Length: 346
Figure 1 (spheres, rainbow, N blue to C red):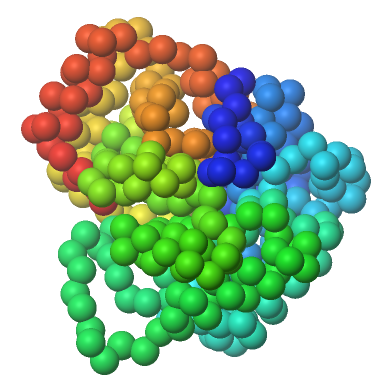
Figure 2 (cartoon, rainbow, N blue to C red):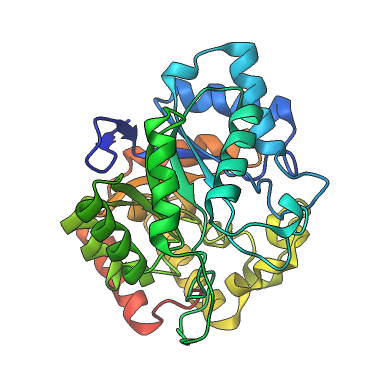
């Protein structure tokens, strides 16, 4: 396993991070425990979760993923061996079950969210606490175009960062990060950290995969120059890059079979590009999922690649990807596919 600095902190995280958003929905607690044990044995020391998990978010399962992780720490101990990341939810019209719909990134709601997460996780501190998505309206979650609303009311960045500073000073969190952010948001947080002595963001958790390389436009330079590396989520584009959904296939327990909300990964353009990537891997005797993961992990702006699995076979294959090298021939073929069909599933 490779280990990389988390921002400018003293922490070093594994190049693969264990994602958890299926736990409590597609995976039981026993299965989650087995995944944690297997990842630990492979050298993974980084685990990522969120208050809103599992996905898709529902009132009946809200917080269940964090509770499972907390139960693991209570039963197995070893909290000190893990770098634990979680997130506070941003504004949403669809999640009235979270604080009765009060999910603005204000002092009151960040404090309430953090305290509840600490209780569920059965820990005194979270190593990396992230804002799951911005309080303001901007282009995230598949929306490439930005439309400005001069009359929009949103929590100022300085208000959110000030309370995070207080939480760091209180010892409840060690470092902070952003998620689903844009260059403007990152630059604003960095400016306030520098000018006011508040915590500096250590990472940015955005989507990045062969079907969505939009992070390379603007955000990659930000990560490199400011040491705010990417925690890449959806590196397999919700499983499509394994090839299991090609030609209209819908495996019984597949996430895209169960949950229609992720349809952006199955549009015709994405399917065509996906088929080419899968065929490229097979032509070279590679597992398509491992090739897709290896491409993400090797990027210089990536701190850690967040892998997820619903069964142990998937997890083992994903973990093995960290040792896969990609030849110049494969990389050039990937580049050619990308040039012909760039970012079909943003």
